[in-house]
Picture 1 (cartoon, rainbow, N blue to C red):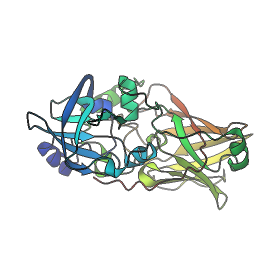
Picture 2: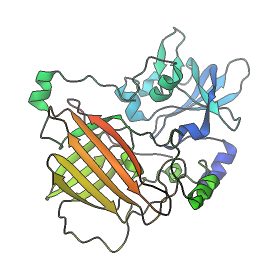
Picture 3: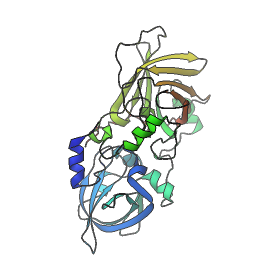
Picture 4: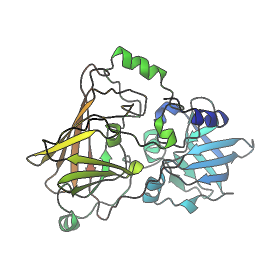
Length: 335
């Protein structure tokens, strides 16, 4: 799918960075620079805030992006942390295409205070003593956890370890046709997220934002803070599959002891990750979710098969933790 409207805008500003995307595909982590100057504009929006900075001395205009509002606010960075006219220095990797565009990992105030704006990138580059999991919370005491942890699976969980399939660290076992599709993918044109389109399964499960599980009408409903996405797991194993395909697919769950097993088929989404890996109608996902005995951790894994794309099954996993008082925030993606 060619998003021609976005392509036109990007011709004027080479990387607006207004959407969730593979940061590693756009920015060169071997080329970390500093931009000192004056903040001239602030777009406080999800999925990434944007800053415009006029560089001191040269007058060059730089376009910067940082984490999502939800991440920054949880880490204590508010909208009024950046005011037009502020003098700051920003540090981060710059765009591979040579444009004046940066993933602002750290901001340095005139007093020397360092503020982490992209915690994962800052940690990866050793720029800041940042929480490598991207979201900062205080873990509850054992007493608080025992009193307030809720019922097993059904609460809000925060991802702490995840595959991060968009960071160029994976080399999937691709078929020749899939390799050709990846080679043709342009993250600045083809990514549906550029228009704030919610991703489908299974990429939706690899995200850094809180996830809520609830039991509704005998089924399990998963609400993802990222993209405000909702997914229903049918707990009737005899439930017939729908005639058509949907973004989240047809998910049927069952309990095996204390583990929730979910099988998903009939997925209508083009990409397996943020790097342009395709997926076909043959894709199937089997997930396992297991809560630890203390009720504070949720371990999960997913096995994906797609004979048209992968030469063998792909497996990734992660874990989430429960934090007292955490709630899902509105995402309201804006492009």
